[in-house]
Length: 88
Image (tube, rainbow, N blue to C red; front, top):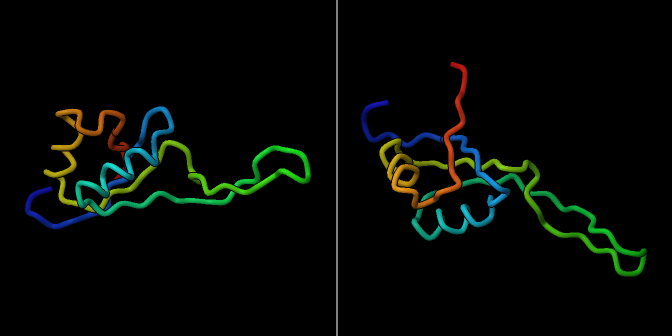
């Protein structure tokens, strides 16, 4: 992929660190997306509550140029990030 056009990169995140990687990529001004859903947390009927959590574990999408994604992955700036292998 040559040039500087931005595309969405589906990424795998190790150890369920989606929210940590999301926060770090936002700090680095990289647009990203983590699918979120409300999940009912265990507890008795009076103390149960809903929490916003990632809907798909170990998954984040980043919108950037390929060179920027490579800079993040290889020097281990975001050590738990891996580009998903997609069948074309």
